[in-house]
Image (cartoon, rainbow, N blue to C red; front, side, top):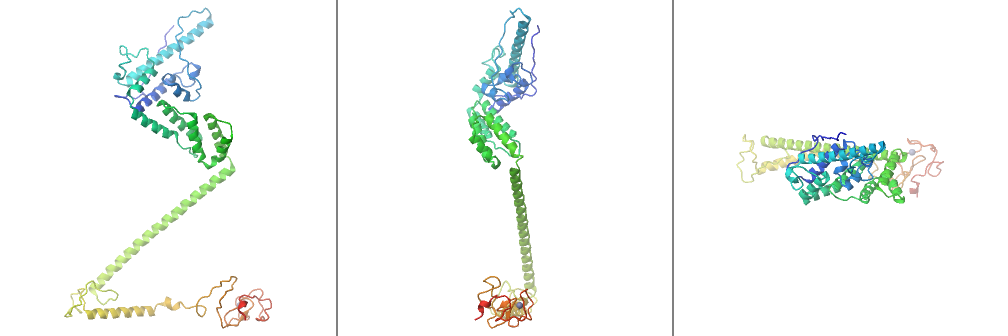
Length: 434
Ligand SMILES: [Zn+2]
């Protein structure tokens, strides 16, 4: 019978120089597991994970997908002693698995020796070989002897944060479960214990924040389900149901509409403030230009009113500057007085011809009186001297407004109506009649 022979391909495994860090050890284990998983393991408990179990602690192993029990370690069946074909076949099968196991151990140890400095294993080696030591023991040896506590603690803190990851309702919930499981695997690799209770506490906290999962949370609290697996199934189902619930779809639609509206508002506001900035810039620009113009004017023409030159000499001047060609900003007291009178004159003229002021004449012989009682009625008269009545407009109207001149006639309008005989006309403001 031919002996089993296996040679690992290490090309996907990083070489680590010097003393490994926590991160490097964990990475090594992952890369190793990938190689080991690619080899089929004919032990039922290994499921789809090939030979990766030989590098795992029990806690790590049980977290793997579909795994419910540890893998029984193959033992040497010894020489065949049976006398039937069936027993012979069974013995062959057991021996083959045992030989495979030995080969995977040998290859894994070889990989460890190839990827790490040999100084790390001096205590474990016999003639340069890791004989009689399982890869798991070698790995544990590195873990126990070379990992700094601060380094490990930092990794643990990071991984604990990963465990608190939030559920993102825009992605299918399985992404969330996967992230949780990865954080958990990492912590377990760091020899930390993560209980189902802790994972469930975190999961509940993030689900609870989601308004669409309010009912699902209530349902969960009321129910009798208690395991993490049950919790995963429960929320997966609820989330799936929410996706087709018209009420929730409507709510999402509304929420999205509000979100879109607030974005529009934000835009409008931003545009308005941009306009404001532009306006302010324009005004400042114009102000600067006016000032420049005024400065230029005052330098060349002192008769421009409204601008007093920058430097004023009040001393007894010889008056040489008046009409002088020097065009300096020095003026005499007399010139200044003249300028001032010219200025005020201009101002008065300007006011006199200002059309807006003249137009503001009151509509009602004085102050404006509001219809403060509603329905066109007021507590104060607009036309205190008028006794006119109109069946469409009522009392307290212009003295010239009569039933026959009314231009605002209603259905109840009768030209023959009077204050004494309204003939079905309105009583608006008739409370003024004494
Ligand atoms: Zn009228």
